[in-house]
Image (tube, rainbow, N blue to C red):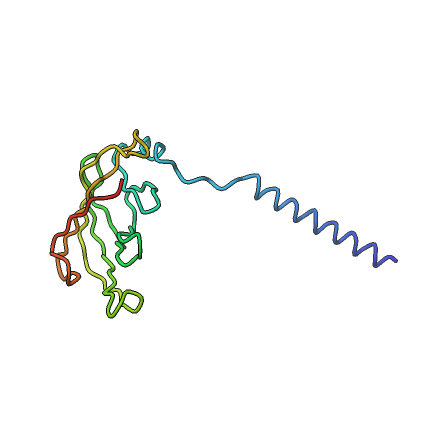
Length: 155
């Protein structure tokens, strides 16, 4: 009978300890990512909008091919990000899709990324976003691309 009482007491203490830990964890909710207006207040410079319509300032990576993920920028190091343009060096990982994309291999190319044409973002009119991206390949490039390629960015 005494062992049964000790088991109940130990179970009760364990439940109380777990409740205390869970209460502490739930009392401090995770900080939500900044909204587009919050980003604009912190940095008056335009944002780069990703495939999921999220704004970014100086991202380390960026998906170019939203539909299939076969082209992405990685290891981005930004040397400039202001109201007029942004410039970074990094790598462009591109799938050769040979013999088809699911069986293709990714190749990495050094790239210089330039963002410009800052304009109002239709989804958040108080936020400006970069509307154009230019990729320059200083050494080697995907075989179907020119040494300098310019893309309009989604709005």
